[in-house]
Each structure stands twice: as C-alpha cells, then as structure tokens.
Image (cartoon, rainbow, N blue to C red; front, side, top):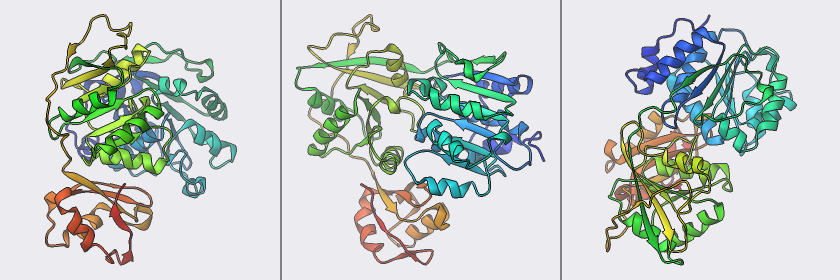
Length: 438
C-alpha cells in the first residue's frame, strides 16, 4: 500500500476546509518533482498542512518510522500531532517532547509509528537509547528551522541527521528568508517555494506613553479598552516580566493566561487551552508564543517590552492581521523609552476607553482527570455534561483531550451548579477527578 492516490478532498473535509490555498498547492506540486524543498511562508498560512500533504505519497506499508518531523517547541509538536489526527489517516503517529515521562514514549514505540514528530532534544535522547531504528526514515521535515537555530538546537539536529542513513527527501520550513543552511543538512539542489510575502491583512500600529513607573497601569487601561470577545497577546522580553504582570493582574482580579519556558509542560498546555477556549482573552508571554503554537487569530498584539531585534518585532506582529484580517499592534512605552531604530516614525496614539472595567470572559475551564489513554473521547464528555437538565449544547465550548486528562470549556454562569452536580459522579463507570482548572 502507498498513499499515491490520496483523497485530498476527504482530508480537507476532516480538517474543516474546502480547498487548499495557493501555497499548499505549490508545495504539493513541487514535492512531486523535487526531493528537497525549502518552504518559506508566514505564521498562520497553513505550512503544516502543506508539507504533511506532500509527505503522504512517499509513505508505504513497510514497518518502522518513515517520516521524522523536527520542531523547536513542545507546543508546535503537539500542534503537528493534532493536525495529523484530524486528517484521520490510517497511520500511527507519535509525538515526542520533554516535560512528560520518557517511559510513556518508549512504550508508544512498541509498535513504531509511520510518522514521528518531536523536539530535537527528545529525538536525540530516543536515538541514543535505541528506542527506534533510524534506518527506516526516508523523509525529514525541519519545521520552524530558523527558530530551531535560534533556540540553539543545531548540535542536536546535527547528531540526528548523522544517524539517518537512508533519507531520500528533506523539507526545510521557515518564516524567515535570510537563514544560513548548515552543511550537515546536505540539502542538495533544494527547490524554494517562497510565499513569505503573501498578502496579509491590515496591521495598525499604535502606542501609549506612560510615566516611567506606570507601565502595569497602562497595560490594564489598554486591556480595559478591548471589547468583550476580543483577545490579545502581551509580549515581554523575559519571563520575570511575565510573573510581575501576572501578580499585578491577579491583584486587579483580571482573567488572563501566562506562558513562558519556565512553566511545567502541563501548566503550559493548560494556559494555552484557556486562551484558545475563551476562558481568558489575554495571554501574557515571552517570545516563545511569537511562532509555532496553536492559538486563534488575534485582535491585538501588545508590546509591553519592545524587542531589540526587528525580526522578533515582526514575528510578534505576525500573530494578528492574518489573511486580509484587521489587527492592531500596540506599543506600551514610558517617557524614558526611546523609539527603537527599526521604527522610523512615531506610531499614532491608541485611543483608550477610560472608566470601564476589563471585560470578563464568558467561559471557564473544567479539568477532567481522564484522557485518551483511559479511552475517554469527546462524545463521552459531551454526553456526561449534557446529562444534567440545566446544561445545553450551547453551554459547552472547546473540548481538548490529552493522554491522561481533558479540558472542557463551560459557560461561566453554569459552572457553580455544575461543580456541585459532578461531585461523586463517574465517567464511563470510573470515578474521575473533575474541578475548575487553575
């Protein structure tokens, strides 16, 4: 069996799309005629689906890992795994990343997957422990390759490439044009697909200027000016700033999520889940959220601290104003902060709406102590919550199921009654921990 006759229409339907975009069509066509590709396209343009579709025709029914996808962050690995599962392919897929037990991943290799997605550090760890045979791998993808280099994964990637003896094709994916390709990749005669300048939406650049000690207050005024249902990422340069803002917003009783590399993996996943499902409309983050994570399109990007590099500024802004949409990028500066050299003109002043509180989200997130490994699926959870007569389908939001847990968005006005109702109940005849996720 091969995937040479792929039903693209069926796959797109499974993903909720009708048609491929031009970049995806170009990638699929190029992959049929070239062994090695460089794919350049901005964040949010559908690069993941583009290269996944191009990999399928070269997969066969031979045992062993055939496709290796390397990505710089756990969140991007999980996003790739999620897309693959939504495609509903008759293929086993494994995701490997730090932050959860190595023993669980080792067990998942008892039957090797056809497609393996992982971070460079964890994949190197598996290779050094001989968890799987690298000789069966014929296709390699380096997703967000420029970010992998920026994060210092070059040594790990060089080791991994050195263990792959039968690679026939490689795809290097990047949002940045000016990258130096290391010699260890041996990327011979690559064909470049360049959609890095594809049409974007309208980005409005604005700023507020506050006294030197009043940045937190300025941020709260910006967040309070957002309409109900709008969302924003607040970018800082260091995780310590994330924690300081978090403390301030907690005192102000504001709903928010926080995201940086110092959090445990389970907490990072929860914070992103709360932001995706609308339990919080604000994500306070370091630049780890500028690319490579699965989050909704944004109304606002807020630069609480301006980055010194222009490319980081551009990647942050790339989270909004996608695909002809309208987005706003807001700089929060003090009277002592100079305008960075990459901005030639002073942005217009952002119009604050004074005297109104920050809008509270309509949703809260419930934690369920059972997941995929416990044979719990979305249908089970929908049925469980709708058994209570005060609950309706409109009271259930996004459901995300992990290996050993699940998160369900619940209308906030039903959460108190639901918490009381679920005490001492069972899911699939199993006693299960159910509580508000924090």
